[in-house]
Every structure is written in C-alpha cells, then in structure tokens.
Amino acid sequence: MRWIRGRTWLPYAMAGGLLAVVVAGVMMWLSAGRAQQRADNLKQLDRGCAGLLPQEQLRDFVPDDEAGVLEEYGTMLDPDQESRALLHCALFWGEGRWEPDTQVRVRAEALVTAQVKKEDADDRAVDDFPLPLPPGVSGSTSGDDRIKSSGVSARLRVECPGGLRGRSGPSKALSVRVELPSRSDGAYDVPAADHLLAARTAVAAANWVTERQDCGREPIRTDASPRPAAGATPTKLCAWIDPVEMEFATDAWEFSGDDTYNRRYGYCDGNITGYGAPPGLPVVGMRAESWSGEFAQGAYERHARAGTAPGQRAPSPAAPDGSVVIKTSEFSSPKLALWAESVCDGGRSYHRIALTPAFESGEKKKIKVEGEVRKRLSTDARATLDRYLAAADGWPQRARCHGTKILGEVEEWPR
Image (cartoon, rainbow, N blue to C red; front, side, top):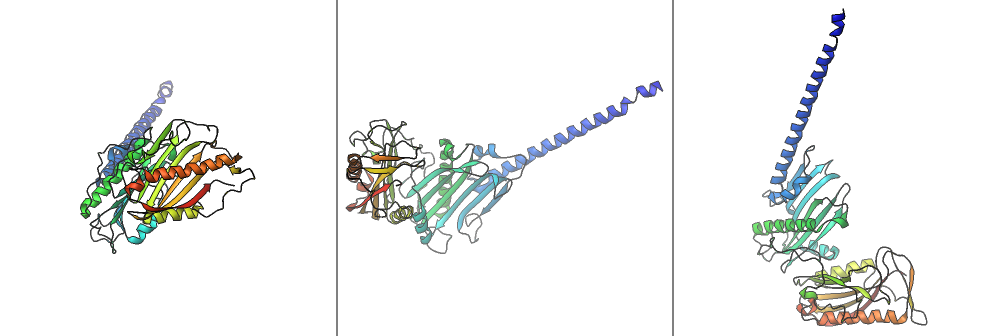
C-alpha cells in the first residue's frame, strides 16, 4: 500500500505534462495564425489602391489579429463600370468600416461644373501643401481627429486642359483626396513628416490618373524638395512684407505663403514668434489673401455666412474720446480686416488684409482701445493693402489686377 501511495503523483504529473504540451501547441497555433494573418494583411496592403499606398510607412499600422477590409471601385479600376470616382480605395483595420481602429482612403474624381462651383464655395484656404505645386494645381494637408486614433489628410485640385473621361458631363478638374493614419495624440500634433507623406501620396494618385486619362497635364514632381517651414524670410511672392518698414511689432517674425503663383488664389502670412502681448497694441500678425473668379465668389460667400464680409455689421460704437471696447475671445484673436475688389486675369477678384493687434490670447475680457490706437489700426490696414497691391512680385501685380476699389473694414471681434 505504501508503494501504491508513493506512486499516486504519476497521473497528476502525466496530466500536467499533457496540459503543458496542449498549451504550448495552442500558443504555437495562435502564433502561427497571427503571423499568417499579418502576412495576409501585408499582401492586401501591397496590392490595394493600384499600388499607390506608401506601403513601408503603413506597415507598422497593419494588425496581426484582424483581417483588413479592402473596398475598391471606380472607372479607372473597373472598365465600363459607371462610377463618379475614377479611383476609390478604402482599407480598414479594426472593428468595422464605420469606426475602424485604422483607415486609409484614396479617392480621385473628375468634377463636373456644378461640383467645381460647390467645392469652390465650400473650400477653405488651400495654403499649406508641403510640396511646391505647378500652376493649375492647388492643395492642402491637415491633421484629423478620429474616434479611436488620429490621422492626416491631403487634397489636390488639378486642372486638366485635355479633359477627363468617366463622367457624363465635360470635366477638366480632377479632385484627389487622401486619408492616412498617424501616431500623433491629436490633429494639432501630427508631425510634418506625416503631412509630407499624405502630400506625396496625393501627388502619386493624381499622376497615376492623369497619365491614364492623357488629359494634357505634365506629372507633378514627387521628388521636389518640401516647402520650407515658416521662417524669417518670406517667399518671393510675399517679399513685400517687412514688419520694420510697416511699423509692426519689433519682435522676431515667421512667415508662410505661396511659393508659386496660382491665378485663382494667393496668400501671405506673418506672425511674431514669441508669446505675450507687446505694449501699445502693435500689429503682431497679418494675412493677405486674394481670390479670383469662382474662388472669389466662394470666398466671399463663406465670409458672408460667417458674418465677416464687408457691410454686414456697423462699426463698434465709439465713446466721445474715440475709444472703443473690444471683447476678446478664448478661442481666437481679434482682427481688423480690410476688403477690396479688383478685375484681374482670373476675372472678378477680392483682396483681404487681416491684422491682429497684440491682445493676450486665451483670455476672455473687455479691453478699452484708445481712439488713436483704433485709428492707427485702420491706417495700418490701408497701408498694408496698398503695399500688397503695388508689390512687383506680389499676387495682385502677377495677376495684373486693375480697377481696385475699397469695399470696407470688418471688425472681427465680439462686442
């Protein structure tokens, strides 16, 4: 009996060993399954979207525990298929197409006239594309907040002189939109490298479509040097900005603006680089914009809807000494804008100069602005507009604008 009791551990040991073998086998099976799933997802990434996706940069986003969902359609992918898109591709990883953990999208569409007008009316300023673009091409990039992640998007508008096929109506405008994932915490943290990646992907998609459509457009260079970050020297189109000569704040400034001339739209921007508000309410930020043709109408309508077009509100009521009270906002700095209208190469055009005086940002309070200071802001705005209109390399002169008339000031601050 003692011998039998001494051997009772054998069945338990054998069971434990068997369990260990089973667990190890399951783990190996799961590991092999995850490796196979990731391999399948990588193959899907490589072949998706006509090979236009930045595969190496996206590999870190590819999971090994869920299959990707690839949607592709369009007249450039499926011959004789009726579709508004020349190319549409969406790749999702995660819980589903409506709230995926990660998503990639590429869409290229030939725009008919009605769509061009609507897109121009809804368009925001396209001034931050990180690659130099040739005439007839405009674009922008932006960081995006998503439900479970962050991302970056890029858009391009490409004029095709030879026309585009695939729509029932005539079209000479190509719209390209790209959405890529990012590791950033939020839209404002998306690094410049991600913006550049989205821009290059959009350019690659545009070139892929225009080559196959043979629409009379030379390829946009993807090997061009990125647009330099904002710095102390304005671009040639914005070289008319000189804060010292314009008697703006004496702090260090940084600038951004167009590298190349676009007959539909142009902008120049400058701001001081430091924090805080210099005394005396000097100008610490300025922006000059011009829109022509359909872009002009769209820009004016956007400002009209926002209540910032000329003539929509009376000037701030002034005290007997000429002073006015401005309510600052937690979300935006008060600005004084001056509008003008011209006839330029692209047709009817609008110009807008917006000056930002040195209020403390992020505060909500009432500030009394002395009459002399308020008058000086108007003088600065008019002097800036005159300087902008007269600059030899500036947008108005490049667009051969004439017949300019002042439309009026807009006080972009709460009361």
